[in-house]
Amino acid sequence: MYIRKTSRKNKDGSRVTYLQLAHNVWDPEKGYARPEIIHNFGRTDELDFSALERLVRSICRFLDPEAVLRYESMLQGKGEVAIRNPRAYGGPWLLDQLWERLGIRDVLEGLTEDREFRTSMERLIFAMVANRALAPQSKRGVDGWVREDAYVEGLGQFSYQQWYRAMDFLLESAEEIGRGVYWSVSNFLNLEVDLLYFDTTSTYFEIEDEDEDFRRRGYSGDQRPDRPQAVVGLAVTRDGIPIRCWVWPGNTADMSVIEEVKRDLVGWKLGRVISVLDRGFASEANLRTLQRAGGHYIVGEKMSAGKPEVEAALSRSGRYQGIRDNLEIKEIVVGDGEARKRYVLVRNPRQAERDREVREDLIAHIEGELQNLRYLPEGQHTRAICALRSHSVYGRYLRQLKDGQLRLDRGKIKESERLDGKYLIRTSDDTLPAEDVALGYKQLVDIEDAFRTLKQTLEVRPVYHRLEDRIRAHIVLCWLALLLVRVVERATGESWRQTRKTLARMIMADIVTPHGTMTQRTEVTSEQKALFDALKMETPPRVIDIHTSEGS
Image (tube, rainbow, N blue to C red; front, side, top):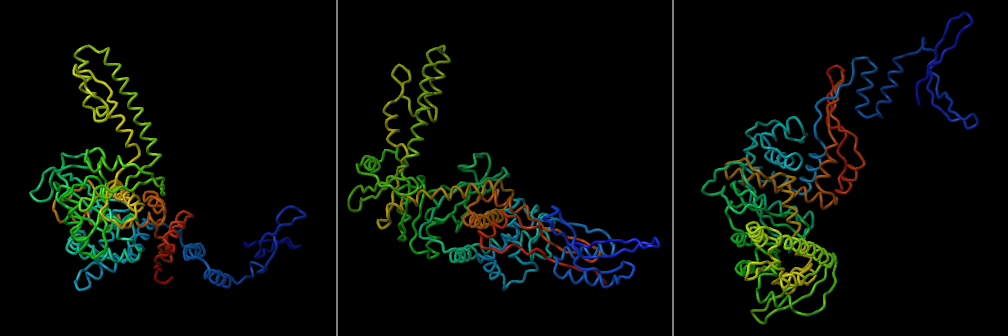
């Protein structure tokens, strides 16, 4: 539908122009569209243009505010529409909705209701968490991000130093926040928390000097033994949701934290807690610690350690039972009475085939290296033998004869074949079905994914803070960001990297006209709509704010 102007020439040579409301109608006989007059406004020299303006304003009641401002400017000829201050909107808005839905906002606001802060600590903490999830930066970078690059609703006026005050508050209330967030998130998501996975990693500092109590050198999972570090622990549910984090000095040994973790989790009254740990925690002392408060464990066993019980479990005959995820299991009990130990031997046929192919390639390569030794001069020959014998992979399949020559160790090869595609799990819980034991341990990969997200996506390291309290607060912020990220990934089935990219396409900007300024977001794409639907969220409001000019 459009306004059409037509003209007619009079006998005296003058010309009369008419204004009409028309639309095009397809003429099937002629094969083209022709105009059809809906309403004739009459001669342009006799028109009441104020009446037309009233008509336009009446139509504008059914238009978007952006269109109203644009058309009013065109109507009165007062200049073009300008678009200013584009800011990220999709990511902060989605995380803010999730933050509120999970009850984290209520937890933080409840802890500050009796304290007088000039700026909302909850809003400042959320802004730092959102930045960590969307565009990880230093605290100085967060300040610029919020002021210029992103929109965080309700933040209001604040000073730079208040970021650090918010971090101090976060640490002061860490225990209450952790407990409150856990109960809120668990109730909302209906999490099964009787089965928990626990593991540790390390994060290093760009500051080279150590301190006496916290920033210490130790085993570095980041391959940075030249830097002081801190040790981070995570407890993750079977759904991959991180419900608690811990921070310890950088020289803390994994074995020394079990009792503290167990005590903290029992203190939350979670009921039956079954801790799922990797092989590094399988010492008898650690396993006894896990059972002190009535809890149970599922733990991986080192199959090549030579322990009599493990050898007995591996050599036990019996048929495998097929379960899901391409796994086969066999339950084995070794010993009697107090010495009784329950094992589940797991075999993955596909992994067994991959292990066989990898080993065959290694053996073929080793045979070629042994063949090449014959043609080396004496000095090079000796060095090459030492290099092969000490190689971390090749050396396990070699034996050295009394004359110094190397040969393939057929016994080691056969032993390796026996373990293809298998892993052995031990549990203290006799009531847990063998299938749950196997699948529970398999889900330990969730916590490894969580650590990768912390380090690669949320960029928890390197850390530039020097003070222990600030370091601890930084890691708590990263944990809260990881919690939001994991909930989104669980609901959408998409990686956070892809989700973050999709959300980044939704921005908001100020649309400035002579009649006022309107803050509005971009149109919602089909990918963004699918994302909000998966999270059962309404799409963000299109118009965020409107300010009209005086007198307009």
